[in-house]
Length: 312
Image (cartoon, rainbow, N blue to C red; front, side):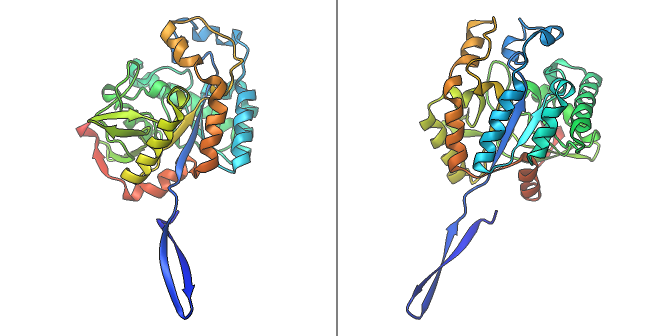
């Protein structure tokens, strides 16, 4: 979108022209996984047992698609390959609704827990099922649990070798499960040692008192006061002049999902705020402007700073 729109005010024979700032267009994204895939319960729910759980991802994605259609926004759906393999009709439904399909790995394994060859195999397997289901090219990736950290930036080279355009796996915060707080807060063009390039779209933060604080989706949208979320989005727009990245999971709109066993902190993070999530999401959709990740990358990549992978 243009940075400013022109409006005219006529006063007798004088035409005054003033600039009216256009709203910033943010990115809208969904990590397509089921309630039993999440890292919070990984110690209790093994991947070999996933088929024994009743899937709710399709019906929950339909709710999200309905919301997006109501407000006429397109999004990026980062699909778990395991889901695409078992429910290709869902993948086609997302694509037919005009949304971008991207990759969320196959088996929801953290990148830093994999060897490079395991990561490549998982990546190819997931992408294959997504592309076969919808007949579209997948160019975006988001790692499970934001698991590209300082020690796993080797994954960028593999993503570029596999012809991915962008990644959105880094959360520049401190967290007990993930985080790369030293990484720049906004979109970067990363030059790799091979001469290739990958675009990194970090998850959104605000800078306050020397720390990066999270905003914009998932548990942060469910758990933190809506007043904080609104204030933080405004701060990113007005102070940083940058878009924010809104993200969510289908299970977050499903307060009736089965309760799984797990640690108290994991259950607190996972189940708190489910009943109010749809309303919070609708509030943001109703007052914001959104586009898929691929469109955001295409719009901003030429003006983005360049970062050498050797500096990470």
